[in-house]
Structure formats: structure tokens, C-alpha cells
Amino acid sequence: MSERILIVGAGQAGMQIAVSLRDAEFDGTITMVGEEPHGPYQRPPLSKAFLAGESDEESLELRSPAFYVENNIVVITDEQVLDVRWDAAHGTAITNTGREVAFDKLALTTGADVRRMDVEGVDLDGVLYLRGLADAKALKSRWDAAQDVVVIGGGFIGLEVAAVAGKNGKTTTVVHRSERLMSRVVSPTTSTFFKEAHERRGTTVLLNTQVSRFVGDGAKVTGVELADGTLIPADIVMIGIGVVPRGDLAAKLGLELANDSIVVDEFARTSDTRIVAAGDAVVMPHPLTGKGQVALESVQNAVDQAKVAANTLMGVENEYHAVPWFWSDQDTMKLQMAGISAGYDETVLRGNPDEEKFSVIYYRDGRLIAIDSVNEVLDYMAVRKALGAGQTIPSENASDTSVKLKDMVQD
Amino acid sequence: MPNVTYTQPDGKEVTIEARDGDSVMETAVRNGVKGIIAECGGACACATCHVFVDEAFMAKVGEPGPLEDDMLDGSAEERNSCSRLSCQIKMNADLDGLRVRIASEQV
Image (cartoon, rainbow over all chains, first blue to last red; front, side, top):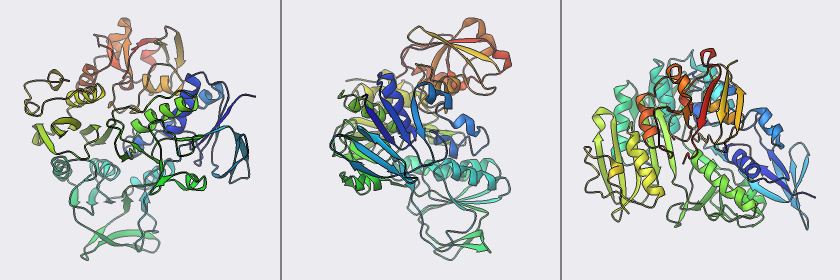
């Protein structure tokens, strides 16, 4: 009998495992189970083009429905795998509808949920999160009628939504708890730039600011009350304060977790070698240094780690060595990041933030580790390539814009 | 609906009927055409959907924009005068019969 692989989670990573298995000529059964009512789709446009009305639902699909049929990939939607039973030779997954799916190997791509707030008024109509298509539709259905938009959380999602709101002529406020924007991943220079750039576009950015409650008129939100008592009017409140990895099924399976994340090795193997995991739900060794544990919530990681996981399922050990990269579109600002800046001890500014065209290049022990670029694609591409080749760019010359970065690359 | 023909890196040709307004990249990826990776999903952020447009169509397709032009400079396979990122070419009736060759290296 041919081998059966079950993929739990039908997002970017799950889809990529299925596709990579077929690309590697896996001829067994592939079943993918997802909780959402639709097959795999792209999440990044939800806070960008989809919200701005520049793309529709069908264009979000990662593959057409016919693709899965032609490639013999069974996609079960709107169902949740609740438990897994192991027998001597194989496993059986049980879903919330009572369906049983037998398998020989298992891949977990369970992703992450939004982090929820626990304050008064959070259940009012118009207080929204943004993770899936259903969330995006809820936001969009209220969008045109809304004038006052308050975004809670100055991370990527929050700032992307704020950028669309500002562009659509809405009165926009970003309320951020810590002292600078996107502080978990970018340098102070980049944070300060984005604060000023959003302010130039008419958005109010409040740092070091806590929400005390959401206030409403009946069931509908009308404002956000801050810790100091200030009331900001709101027709829509969009909460974007991060995600929580979904490790509940992995916990049931007895897999090693770090907080709620599934721990995997450089081959995307969990602590149970019959099970691989990839995407937003996992922590892994640093893909460039092999040291420590990192979580990478990005399309790039979902795709590249899924490819590693598919190889492992096929019995091919192919270590995960990809340059992490990420992007965020905020109005006319295209932020592109490559590498992992955590642990940097030096930064070099290249270009002019006042012209909204610059890069911040990160170093550790004199070695290139990462870049944030704003509207500086050439810099970004040069660093991404250099990191991929294990090369560096000397920090002492990197600010010289008369020379292209790619011409400074050395071993 | 307009047709577009892709020459895959393996040399195989595939013709797909595109949805009006969908990009050449989206049409390829959704239908499983090999060789276009498009990790960023069409945001002009990754340069992994590089194609060479058939010369006969170059005038209709047009030149890359400034951002795309910079991205192409960083593409894995060396660009030429017919290089475009396929996420930036939207299909319409005027482009019916479009032919593109997919770059053999994308990352």
C-alpha cells in the first residue's frame, strides 16, 4: 500500500509541503485539513491590497481548485483535527466532525492565532482583529462607512492598516504600548522614521500608551479610552498586537514545546521523528548561524521550511539554510528586510530617511547580519544575496551611496 | 478570456486562459505552472517571478517601472531587455496570445 501523509493546517506552509511532495514525485496519498472554509490562500494582501480594494477573494487563492484535483491533493476545509491516535504502524487523526483520517506520516502546519486583548469593551461591534479572510471581510464591510479608525499596536499589521486608512482619507490613530514602532524587529532609526513618515501622512501615532477600555453606544464601538483618560473617537478599532503560535495539537501529541511553539530541528523534525512541523507555529535553530531558537512569522519561512519538511518526509535530509526575508507595504513606503537583526552591535545608515529612501544595515562582531531597506531595493537585494552566499559588506564603506552595495561585497 | 503561453524552465510549453486583470504571475502560480515562485504573492518584493517576454509583445507589455527595474537588477538569472517581473503584468484582451519564457533561476 502506498504511503499516506497528513498535513494538519491548510495555510502557506501546508500547501507548500503538499506541492513540494508532488514535485519530488511522492506518489502516495496527501490529505490536508484546514479549519477555514476555503483552501490555502495568501494572507499578506489582507492588510494591503485586499483592504484597499485592489484585489479580490479569488486572486488570494494560492492555487486554483483544479490544481489540487489534478495533483491528487485532498483538501478538507472547515474541519479541525482534535486528536491523533497512534497504533503500531500508523496514526489516525480525528476531526471535529468525527471524520477519521489514517496516515503514516504527519506534518503540522497549524500556524498562529491573533493575540487577543482582555479589556472592557473588547467584544463591541467594530472592535476587530486581522488574521484570516473572515477577519479581513469583517473589516472591509465596515471600512467605507468608517471615518475614525484606531489601530491598537504599532507592528506590521497595524501600520499597514493605518496606511490604507490614511490613504482612504480616514482620521487615523495608532496606539502603541512600547516606546517605538515595530520595536521587536527593527532598529530605533527605522522605528523613528516610520513614526515620522506616518505622521507626515496625517496619522496620529501615540507611543508608550495603554488602552484602558473600549467604549460603545449600545453594542457598537464609538471610542477608545486611554490609560490617562483621553477618549479617541472610533468607528473601527483594529487590534494588531501579535500572534500566539498554535501548539495545542502538538501538546496533545506530547511534542516538545517552547512556550506554545513547536520545537523543530534544522530538518523541520519535531521531537517525535515521525512528525515534521513548519511555519508560524514553530521555533527552529537560527537558519543562518544554527544557534539559538528563533520563530519566523513570514511567508518566506513558511515556504522554505515547508520545502525542508517535505524533503524530510521523503527521507532526504536537507538542512534549513535560507536567508530570512520579509516585506511590509505602508502607503508609498516599501520596507524590505533580509537576515535577522537580533543581537546586532552596530548599525550603518545608508541614504537619507528624509527622502524616504534609505537602508539600515546591521552588523554583529563586524560581520553583516541583516538589512532594513525603505524604497531601496538594490541595497536589499545586495544584502540578501551576500547573506545567502555567506559574504559580508565592510561596515566602514557601507554608507557611501556613490558605490553600489553589491560592488562592496566580500568574503 | 486572454490566453498566455509559458515556456517552463524544463522547455515544456503550457497555455493557460487567464482571468481578465490577473497578473501573468498569478495565472501561472494558481495553475501550477513550473518555475515561477513568487513568494511575495505579487507585491514586487522578491524578484522570484522573472520572465522574458516574447519580443513581439514587448511594445504592448511595456517597460518595467522604477521599483521593478531595481528588483530585476538583483534577479538570479541575468536580465535582458525583455525581462519583466510577471507579477507586474496584468492580463487583458489586448495581451491575448502573450508568450513568456520563465527564467531558469529565480533565487
